[in-house]
Length: 420
Ligand code: HGY
Ligand code: MN
Ligand code: MN
Image (spheres, rainbow, N blue to C red):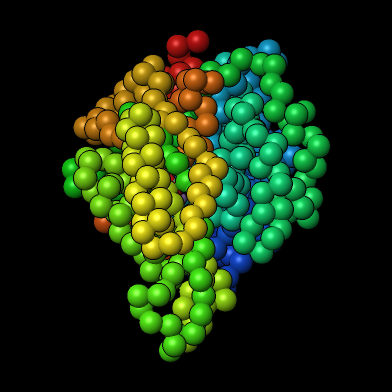
């Protein structure tokens, strides 16, 4: 495939424009009018999956929705027994999200295949585009269920996890129109996979600080996630003296500060309490129950597990001192994932060919790509995002940078084809 023509000068950027237009269409599919919220298996996710499947069909791919609501489109190779390159990202979002996180990678991949299709071109490998639906983990305790199905590591026990409304993942899949009993079937794959590639906004400030449109990812931080429950003794806010209280929220608050202190004590370790709730809490009652989430990440797995152990010990000490009960459910673990040197080298060559300095950088954010560690060669291309802001409506990637990233992906495919 001849390399895509050089990025047009001036304000053209046709690929970036088309991709941005499609992102706007996806952004309109939300469960909360006025902001972008598209949780896994929600009505908006269903509409987005159908829209993406339609785009895939328009560019010669035969889309299907699998047992866990991944949208899978396939652009056949020149010959039937060829290997496959998988390109993906996610179309679920956090609450009050930006329109680029995840969605950009799916739409960029479709744009690149659309160019192949319009040129009537076939490659020595098939291309499978996957729009995962369970990357954010904003609805159920575990995440990456979609990519873990493809990686053959889907844990069926998560089908019985409930969301905060008490709906199980299994029930939500059935309501979405999926058949969980096809999980084993859909996890099957006989052909050779050349690797997995993902284009994603950086969600950090490094590319902007270096004034670079794109960068090549070296590794993805590992993560531990879970829910902490603190049970004290509720009571009347006006009558219980302070020294007799077993206040669940105050204990949780002290634990949250201890978590922050531990993470701040070590370079590139991060820990976040993203959600805290006092079920049934009212202004004039001492909280008897508090629940909060925990997210701990590091590029080094042994340092992350040590930090988890230290934090657990610290929370237990606080619970004893405050005479409250503690229960810790850290159900989600994702080891750090190294990107494949060969595929990353091809991405770097495609970046360099555009006259862009090749910056290699780690990912503090998790991605579907991490599900493929030790399974398939995996690589990621980061796209600059304004102020490094993400998981916010202020998230933004420029049409020009998006155009460049699509051309780099197209050139990467060329380079990979030339090696076969
Ligand atoms: O949490 C993450 O890092 C990703 O945005 N899901
Ligand atoms: Mn993402
Ligand atoms: Mn995200």
